[in-house]
Length: 378
Image (cartoon, rainbow, N blue to C red):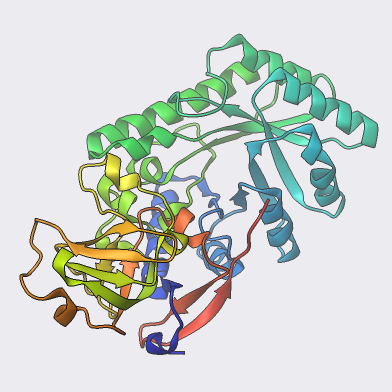
């Protein structure tokens, strides 16, 4: 199917750009001498993950048990569920392990650790638990020097649960925008997670894996001594937030939303699109960065950027394309964007925008496309 034939709105993946992004990250990890475990929450697509594994990725990271179930059914066995486990989800985790899935669970507090021990005892299962480390104060996890780290490690280790490793995510990297700041945070992330592993090992608790990562720190890291693997997700498609962080160009962004011009408000200088926030998502991550792209950066159907324009507003099913001060050409907007014209919108946040669609249209260099399914839910 050609782009002109696809009903709108639709999510497009530029295959060539995606493959370039995959190759870039895998080459970086190979150079740094670490395994790479991509975070598949960005695409939730088996077709994309197969490309990542074919390039050299070892295992995957998931953010939901539904992802774990779907990818295990597709043949992926080495899976890290990188969200703190709670008792209500343990039966599903047990079912996966009983089917042969090498599922690793994450804890960051004594209560969760004790619940995992109790459930494992009840069902005769020796779970593989990783301890989440907080290396930048961004989200969850135990700080490397906290006594809680050893408390959790002992609860697991002394009661038959394997402490498979430590993991961290430097999510505050999304707030940075210089190579120096990103490299410094990457080192902080590395050093903190390695330190946590060293403390556990010194206490007699085996901790074979040291897992770090975010897309910005993965690409900025200069040395990963002591790290065994890196995780990153959005790199596979990139987005406008990552462009503002400084780790990709606009030409690297592989995801776009295909939309059609459906009307005009000429007195306001608006072209009305059939892609509102239900297609583009409500994510306005670039509003807190140096360059605000509104709800997305418009491009022509062939991917050529339209500088000086953004999707300045969005209702549920309507997007507003408008000129901004820096560089939009003068002229009648209805003439430049006639009704029926199709455009592509680069998104602020690839994960959030992808989540609005049941499938991707994967676009080849000749403009033809095939459907790649994605899935929803938890």
